[in-house]
Image 1 (tube, helix red, strand yellow):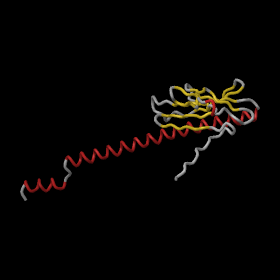
Image 2 (cartoon, helix red, strand yellow):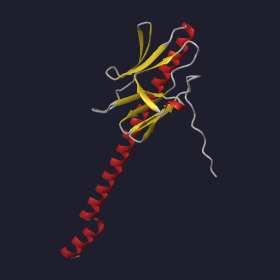
Image 3 (cartoon, helix red, strand yellow):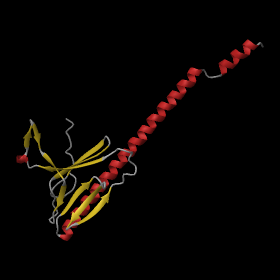
Image 4 (cartoon, one colour):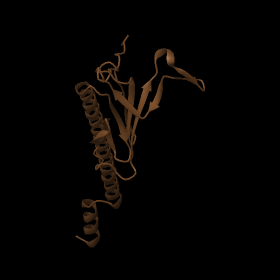
Length: 178
């Protein structure tokens, strides 16, 4: 065989530069999608941790109010990143685990008072049925302030409406398929 024939033979068994670059680009694309999905799952996990702390604080306030026959209040402290249950000057923190959050990602918790059906307001042409409040109160008879809560971490958010008679989450009505 001649030298020319050997070089042709070697080139046919090797990858071209374009094939290598396309393979590397595909691997980079797939790995970036994988990393983005992992980060997304971690943030959703953080939202679930926030929800769990909210429900722990709500249950503690509800049970303590009924047991001690004293109203208990729940609020969210942004500096401490914790739900605080208070009564008679004592505060019990329910700390939200923020160790998995990246830099600059904030937790937002907004409690809203539900206005009575005849207590709505028309502001700038919009019907307003909720008003932001700092704290919610659980009473000794087992009831609470009629409220809803909005939780947000990064682009993930969830909203809950609370039944004022039981202090538990209200389920959304099922929609008809017809």
